[in-house]
Each structure stands twice: as C-alpha cells, then as structure tokens.
Length: 456
Image 1: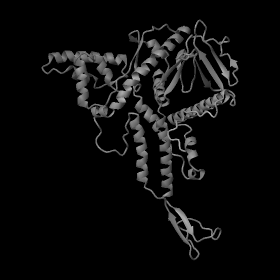
Image 2 (image 1 turned 180 degrees about the horizontal axis):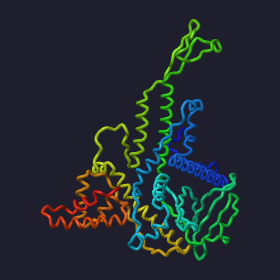
Image 3 (image 1 turned 180 degrees about the vertical axis):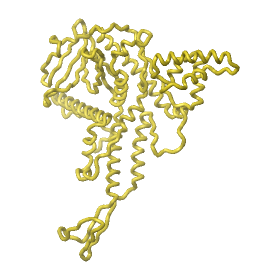
C-alpha cells in the first residue's frame, strides 16, 4: 500500500505508551534539528565559498573526480547580494534628529557588517548579531552568529536567554556562552559552560551576572529561509562537474576487443603503432549527449530559482543593447517590492541593535546617547543617461532640494573641506562675473564648470 503525500513533519508513534510517545518525540526532534543544522552549515559553506569539495565529492566515485576537480561556483553570494539591496549603500543613522559623529566613530565596521548580516539573514531565514565593547580599542564591535539557541519561559513568545558555541582550546570539547536578561527583579546571567553543563565565569565577572540587564544579541527573522538557492547551487556544481568530466572524456576512451588480459601490452601515443591479433579491433569511444543541451539545462536551474526569489539573471552570452535605467527598474520591480517589505523588518532590528549599543556605551562610561533613533535607507538608483542626469540635478538645484555644495560633493564625495571652500569661492566669483555679462548661464552650468577641474 502506497501512502502518497505523507509529510516529513508527521511522527509515527509505534504504540500508545507514555515511554514510546516520549521517545518518538525525542527522536523526531533530534532528526529535525540535525537536518536543520546540516542545511544551515551547507548554506554558510556556499555563502563563504568554503569546504565546497566536501559537498560535491560524495556524489561522484573517486575514480571520476581523479579526472577533474569538482566545479565550484559563487552563485549563492551573488544571489544574496542581488536580493538584499537594502544595505547596498550605507543608510543614514539619525540620533535625535541628526547624524552623531560620536556613534559613527565608535561603531566599528557597522556598515560592512550589517550588509553581510542582511544577506545571511535572507539566506538562512534567521540570523543573530552580538554587540560587544572592546575596552582596549575603545569601540563597539559586531559579531554575526548564524546559530543561536533560544530559551523561553512557558507561555511567553519572546526569549529570555540565548546561548551559542564558541571556539574551545580543547578540540574534543565544546564550549558555549549563555546570556539572559534581567526579569522580575532578578538580574540576568552571563557565563560560559561545557557539554557537561559545568559553568565558568567570564573574565572579570565572577558572579556570572549580565552587566547590561538586556541581552547584547539582536535578531532578524524572515518567514522562511532561502535554502532553495543553496540547493540549486549544489545542483549547478554537480551538473558543471559532470560537464567538465564530459569535456574530458570527449577526447575518447580507448577500447580494444578481441584481446585477452595480459596478451599484449599497449602504450598509447600517436607515435606508437599497434599490432593486434586476428579478429581484434581498436577504436576511441566518446560519451553521447550534447554539451550545449547540458549547459542550457543548468542555466534553466539557475533561472528558475532566480524567478522564485524575485531576481533575474543576465548571462554573459546575452546580446543586444544595455537596458536604460527605467527599463532596469521595470525588470527589477518584484525585487523592489521585496525591498519595501525588508525595510520594516530591518528597521525594527536597527532599533533593537541601537538600544543594545546605547546601553553598552552607557555601562562602559563612553557616551550617553539619546533614545530617539531612526534609519534612513538609501533609495535604489539605476544608471541614467548624461542628459537625464543633468536634468535631474538641475531640477534639484532649481527647487532647492540640492545645494551648491551638494552638487560639488555629488561629483567628488571625497573632496576635503578646504578644497570645497575653495571651489565655492570660485563659483561665487564666477556668478558675479556672469551676472555682469550678456550671456548668463544656468546655476547648474556655473557650478559644473567650477567643479570641472576637480580630481576624483
């Protein structure tokens, strides 16, 4: 009897006894956790391009891969970068209505870390970031934690504690860190522990108390992960390895018939002549199948997963003129809509992470930052023609959306304050000369002419 449609989430309990029920639930939970851990580690390997041979080699006999090395591609990080456009440009982080230089200076590599974190959050479906204060370097530092265990009180939906594995000095023993928040008048906890549950005080904290009151770990969670991208990357790697083997074997496999084992020792080479016994034959046999069809099938895999994730792929052999900025925007409309959904998710996370940063800076007597915090994510920009760009900048100048200084920095963001003031002085002098001339120029033209000699 065939049972079609059976769900892998269904647990079959062999008998109605308490012990059997508990054992079945325990085994199901362990199997699910093991598979989830494997998927997570596989996605991390493909994102960081590490340990990839170990994922490909089990699908080939050792004799096959002695002919060619496994094919490695970097499609997972490319998909992640294309999908998570929110941090493509660094957002403006506004504290009490303005950008805080104090916070910008102390938040070490925040922009690069948040971009990597956003990409991993999308890929894994859930990701964590820990903030720590480095007292030696006087700065906040950020660590991405892909795998974290959450702890809940019964009936509550928000975790009260987190734990995660850390590097151990003993290779055969695992070590973990635990954080919990202050709750109901009781202080939070912070300590290390091993696989046997033995606790160890973290340096300078013999009481194992959380000095911050809140957990210094923030979390982003999507409704689902993007493991389909990782699985497709594996399929592409397998297919491309098969194609590489096929190319290798296209040279042909020497085949002899009518010769018994050990009857004749033959040496291959175009400068060797073979003397075969009567009735024997010799020829080269190549594998069948079209390489072009195999490559197109591989492309189809990539295209399918791209469409499922609101992306599109432009292959290197595509012909035709490059699309305009407006055409690109239309082609990317689904990804732009997904970006709008991402904004609410990461705005909540940014506020959670800033609150952690603010508390850490207060506890370490570095700064007392206001609670008011907001994030202005950069708009997605597409390439414009020179004419479109001039019209856009001119319109912004005429409507006081952009200042003369903004225009100069638009063409050279790295311009120093001294160089900027010098250019502005030159523009003011030119404006006065133009005002007295008979052929006035537009504001945009005057500023552009004054910025024309600026080095990039």
